Amino acid sequence: MRKLFGTDGIRGKAGEYPLDTITVFAIGQALGHHLGKVSGQLRVVIGQDTRQSGANIACALAGGLASADVMVDNAGVVTTPAIAYLARTRGYSAGIVISASHNPWSDNGIKVFGGDGYKLADSIELDIETEIFSSIERNENNGANGARVAIEACDAKTQGHDVPLPIDPTLREAYESWLIGMVRGVDLSKLKVVVDCANGAASEMARDVMKACGVKATFIHCSPSGRNINDQCGALYPEVVAAEVVKQNADLGISFDGDADRVLFADSQGKVVNGDAVLLLAGREMAQRGALVGDTVVATTMSNMGLESAFRSHGIKMLRAPVGDKYVLEEMQKNGAVLGGEQSGHIIFSDLATTGDGLLTALKVMEILGRSGEPIHKLLSDFHVFPQIIKNVRVKEKRPLDQIFAVAATIQAAQDDLKDQGRVVVRYSGTEALCRVMIEASSQEKTQHWADEISTVIQKDIGV
Image 1: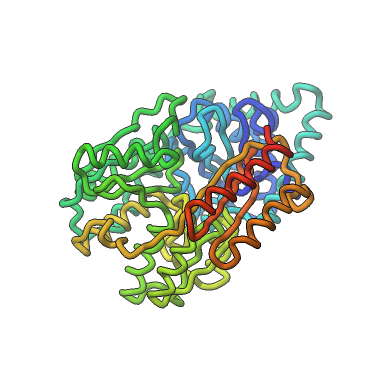
Image 2: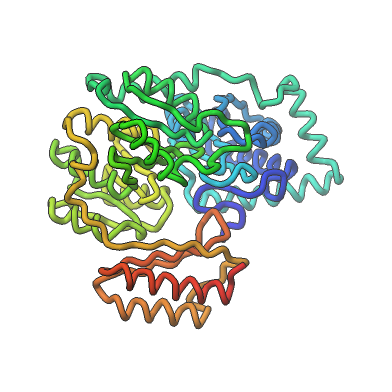
């Protein structure tokens, strides 16, 4: 079982294990050694979001990579999907993003993409973990300051810059040009949108792209300080942009998370439009023009039963994958699907990209609106959502839920009561110390009852 990698890379408190300088150096060193075994040309591209800890982590990571004779190019502050795009189009051995996505500014993380632009398989992450622990042990055997001395030596190779290498602006420009090309020939100038950049990686990039595409856009939360990423804004708080849309009489609200690999929307009436609705919007449009391969869409265990019903009425099959965009992608590849995503706003157009991409999704949604001439709420008027509640319980440990008698018994009681008129999904977060309780039922009362019951027993047994 992996100890460092979660469902979306390595995450933790910046400056603390596993994101302390020594361990980050070892991560870079281990990744470099792994790449040396599988790749000929050892070049890696690094990018980061707007957290103040990003530059230090990038330096330590680049030091470890350099110790394994890996060259590093720095794209600067860019979105996660930008690095995936650059990795697969510029001949890199790997792409690395320093980001903790939707987490608070005090957290950070390391996400790794292969040279093909895809996130690493679990088995590869496990192999790299083994090498990481070996690197740490080797450095310790070389003396208490062994790794730090090595980092200082590698800093000399990077000419003492505060970042691994001078930023190459052409990398970001290449990705932005590719995005802009996705909607050439479509008039988006009639759309008035409000864009919430979460004070994150999209803060400048979204401006560049929207302006080039002719979109009339107002931007909020696009002044990163290093400490305000995701702070009461962005995809974690889509109601913020929804209220601004109503205030400004706009057509659409767009909310990115910190690294802009996901996006949520708001309609002109101030109603939040989540990833399920985006899948329906895109899936039906693609099916109508014969672009939805196999008439199949991949969602997750958290997607609403109403989405499944809506797809069925249009002759579209919906498959469910475990939560996590890498698992959605795996299911898509297994079934040949070209559209998949999560309720949280990770949407994957696999004929265009290798990972969820908030900016790409925003452009595709605006393209659909531009071509149809209809507002988004009208296009989704037939989408009937089952009452759904998701409760997050902070936990002190992640014991198997089926081994906690009271929890298992309460989950079973809920399933027996709801039968085929509802769903119960209880799982641990792959990136935080949380247990997520999701209940869907035919009535709001039953939904609330079982969400409260299950959350209470989890809190009692393993809650913080």
